[in-house]
Image (cartoon, rainbow, N blue to C red; front, side):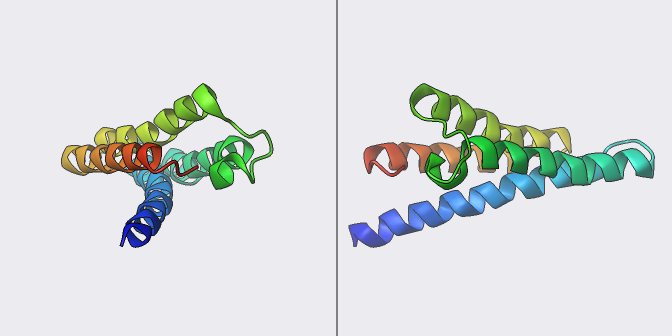
Length: 117
């Protein structure tokens, strides 16, 4: 049963990773600006987040170009997932932003307890 819970927690992290990209894209398209800016932010924002994750965080750092470990990994995750929550909040979705942040905190605590990447 514990194995199932651990696997579910890893699946939740993957869903949260995708949620960050969706949140940043959503934020970009809700900007009070012209379509060129909305398009740039809505597509460029997630692209920048993808590049950062690929460089420093992919696969728990194992698949990253420059793996972030220890305190650097903690900072990366807080900036990455906090950025997703902040993007939702900036887009006017305060309740989903709080739920997203809470899901990340629970996920991170369980990953620490269970020593998951």
